[in-house]
Image (tube, rainbow, N blue to C red; front, side):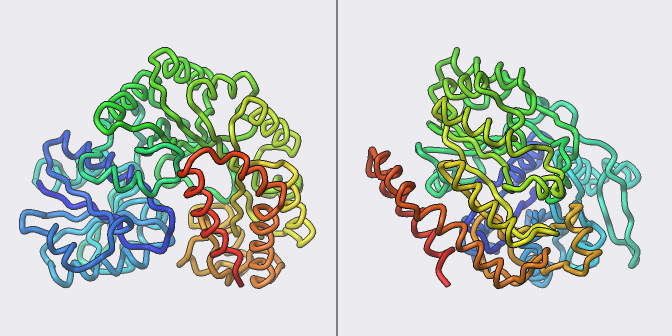
Length: 457
């Protein structure tokens, strides 16, 4: 069967290869289907671009959606259904997985909703459409029949990730994504080596991968990296694991393989400050790691406890010091406006970020996404905001607050956080000293442009 997988339009500056759709497409191809991918975050949406892909052979359309672009996803479904009423439309991704019934009820154009990991479920769903599988055998599918909603519960997660085929990167333009990825080396692409996170931060939802850490074997990961180097000449990888170093032994084995095979590839990842040490960081550096993103979130112990972060201020300082010692750069993530947070504590976080002297800092406004404990806190306190815009990557207009600090003040603190961090003479001088190429100049100018967008009134 031919199926079109769509990443809908949305308001974001964070455009990366759609790994979820590519994994889904690879499994569909393995099962004998013919998937196509259309990413409207990469290319501008036009009816012509859509109609060109929607040939008569396309029977099913899968649309992925995150909370900030769910409205655009539903509008796209309505547009498709109006022009192609015979097409079957199924929604998947984080938002539909969190709010499946609400998503299905939001528009009659949506025929089905898929919850959780889609690789096996979508193949089973297509078997059902082709009469090869009974409805009762479906897993994680929500459907509408005779004005009633039927929920086939989500039973399990994929246990052995090595069984999954590598993402179908041949269905997208890796070169185009590479040009816009934040990387030091080109070509670059993204990779995921594990799924699931066992920690309990109140701002994080786990609709797709769950709470249990599941990882690909180091051999399987290296095999994919070798393929990427051979086919696409990839020189840098961005790992999108939630907690890359959760299993220390596995991380060590992976790094040793990268070193032994002399793959000579640069990479960056994200993890927690309590899951690294100097010895591990030194090995990661030797294996090609040049930057780590740490979810630091706050410079106040009380706020870290509210967030259920499970780390201490001292652990933050130790991890940052160790990374800097071995020569790995750090991106620190920080959140402002957490429930119960005061202006004094917001200032502490901003000052803490500067005191750490990390290479990069990203500040965001606490946002209560569905499926999180923070969502329930906001709902019970009557502070549930309109989630039509994400504040994760770049700041927008702050028109809500989950704490007692008014939205306008939060916006001011957000601007202050960025300007006071990045416009310090010491910081500017340190970056100028590191310029080694024209690309370094381009990289800093691009980030300066983004900074101006954030801090301007």
